[in-house]
Length: 336
Image (cartoon, rainbow, N blue to C red):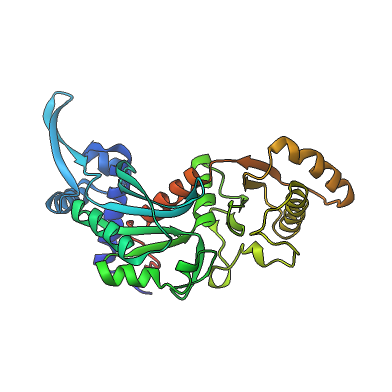
């Protein structure tokens, strides 16, 4: 049997203390020991290390039931920050949104830029601006309308993104880790996080942007399902005879949407399908869908939810995915 190294044990314990302190913000050593189920002796050592590196700060003394006052410790949510960037179309314009967030997900600064996606010089100047203002930024998250294979963006409706090795380029240029994610994958993650959905669920998101081809994100049992090279959900490649970049009639869109829902349901049987689209009103959809179900019987059907919150869910998902990258990841713990 392999022994867990002393260093690994310490990292596990530090992760537990960080998790507890993020939740409670302020606590005494005995409180932290109780919540982490670690000994006070161990907590003394871990707290000392976290105070030295600035992640936790001594706060104030509080009465202790007639005994000696106890010193409280406060978590420093600004110890690490993330720069979250996501690309989208807003009011017909290619838009890049950038936010700086801390470990409590407070937005410290947020701006929007109307620029072609992707113009390298302006993009890097924008990143440099935030890194100069916030030296505590330790990770950059970038949400894109596309998908990368082995680091290179291969599938995207935006010509300026085609062939770009965005993660490698940004990390090489600025020396900071990068989390690169597809827009609908991030959005369905954001929806999942906001709903606090049970893990034992399959939730599918379909996104139909105004100017570009659709995409689909799959959230199964608390995890994104990406498939080979991250290509799961590229529904624009389905054998459906439709030009997504043309002006679709309402009837064509609804008929195609019915087919997509049926296909998705037959393969994944999700509990919910989230529709992010602006082609039709929800009440226009129901009569078509009821008629379609009579012609195409299936043993069960998903709950269909029409939302106009794509950008909000996209932002929430990118924040969550980027902040997750700041958490120490212990991929394998040997048996004792």
